[in-house]
Length: 290
Image (cartoon, rainbow, N blue to C red; front, side):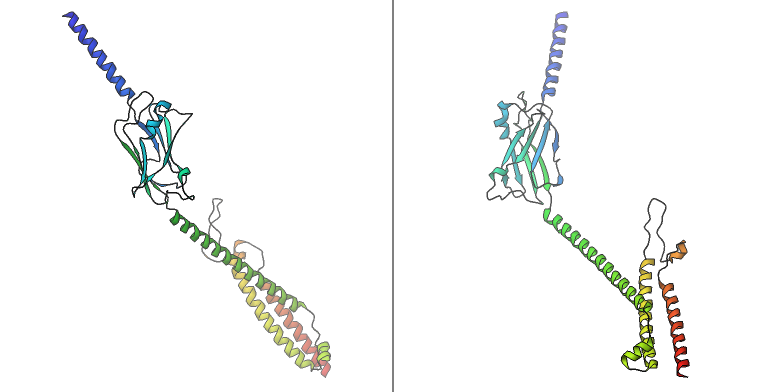
């Protein structure tokens, strides 16, 4: 009886040991890239990297294992492949689309296409263990045509924005130059008697014509000053972490404590000075006629 019990215990131990060894030696895929169902993978260098739980780099199994892989697209076209083994990781292999078979540099890989890598259950590790059942990894490539259109649209929007900003700055500079020219004309000395002598026209006519020109220039200068002033005041501050904030609407610079002069007050003062100067000239002309 005692011998029988001993034999039964030995049998149980052997069964447990062999069963554990069988499970420990079973071959499995523990990691893969791209993952099954992954989208927007690269069209260039189409490949699948597989990592197993056991070493699979034995040269004795390489030819047989290479025949265990098949890469196809959704149309059923089979793509030529190469199988590479990692010198640093004996458990890792790379299944790569073979570009050396391309004719006239024409690749079979397409954008926005689903590809499936089929792995036969006969694939072996270095110890002769097999996967046991077929496995598949499916993934989709990037839609390059769509992405290219988006990129071109973004570039076009940026170009239009840059052209618009450049045009606005150019117009603003033209307005500034014109305002400077008007200011220079305003400050230029005017002698009605010298002009009357040069043209042979009466002094009164020369003064009247000059007043019209001055009024026209002042009106244009005031319009430009208002336009340039509005451009400066309408600039809003963006909210930033330093504590600055966006204003609700255009405000005069003086409201924030600034002392910068936009030019409108100076133009108005210059216009009053010009009017006073013309009034004095008229008065002197009347005195001389008497």
